[in-house]
Length: 179
Image (cartoon, rainbow, N blue to C red):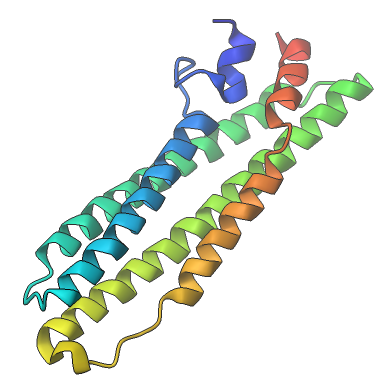
């Protein structure tokens, strides 16, 4: 695999850095776990569960994936800083334009996924509190509505999708000048 392909996010960490694709795989896993958590919680409520053990287990898996996402986003921020340093010398107009587009897209991507992470962590905290209330007060408990947090997380993912359009193309052009 060529260096350009590795750095464009098409490789799976072969260049020694976290790729956009690896980060997105973690986000996808978080969303799948969240869907599973919601279904499991509804099942446990319907079955009048006393401990919500299955839901709590899924919550822990989801939190672990959020910690992994945080780690990946930190590594990506370091990569962006390195990319800025390695490409600062470029003077050809197309290279400079692509450099600026890459930097902006990676920053936007990282910021959007950081917002997603924050919203999901807030949502999970809310869910844990709701589960504790259900355990102590039963189905009459007054629960917090996490819909707003979930919507904010989904909006952050949409912002992310908008920010990374044609990122691979911009990276390939940029790396053609750097290598």
